[in-house]
Length: 370
Image 1: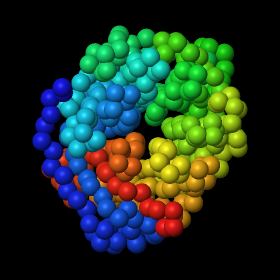
Image 2: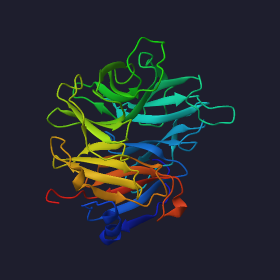
Image 3: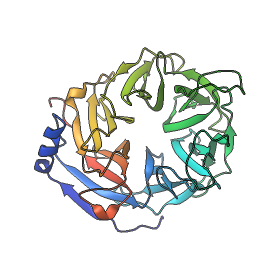
Image 4: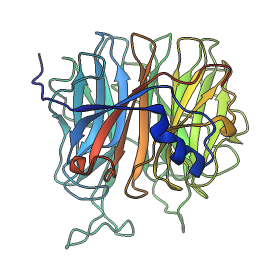
């Protein structure tokens, strides 16, 4: 058993959200939403996952703010469908900044976390990506359900210059793992490019996450980065990508296990990013996305069984963020069919005592006729 701490939960009534919904022309709302605190003082970039043993796990950032050389990666667990959460367990904490996690569970039940590590901070501790200091991509694994983690192994991304993982790692029917990693354009190892370009790639492992290789690029025809992956019952894989210019969410798909991808199509307007995808019990797809236009928070969107979305049918999840440093939602489906979405925010107008936090939202997504 993991140590537990008391969490206060508030139930948000439908009418409380109507004014905010009108403010950003949201046209739909969950009929009921429960909101609770996962962890305070940390919680950036959560990635939530339903484990094979029934628990819900979430890897998240601690040790520093959005940027900070003391950044580390922690993991928390819930054994009661997101009502309470364990105290954070350290996944990785190096002398420099460990950040930007991806997480999955291999067919052999090992937990896998990919992340980016960067030392690009000056002597005063200020982040400066122009500094010529190490930045690497790493993989760590747990064979005991997340209690202990292996020494990380470096993932070779030299042919794209750098590589940052993101989101849920897919476990395919044949046991292969697919992880979204964004980095620079493909080129011979060593040469640097004059200016930054963002490309979204799929890395693949066939040995339960021990070794990885670049498998495909899904950002065809544009610059994209943080990418959420979902495999549909049909076998089609959806990829919801954040565009570098405008920070919108674009969607692409693959019908050959991630080898080739369709032309991306825009789903959200500017500054609505990044996204997460999860399959609902009725076959529809839930997209949750950060909302940095204002009022700040998280919005939801339901797509059909083929992953077709209409931004005009979005719904409100939260909108009380104190600024644009918020979002990065990640969802799982609860055993009763409701959705659980984790997010982070630098502060909450409704819960000022939460400060920087990772929060949990439990709700019933809008029905088909909404």
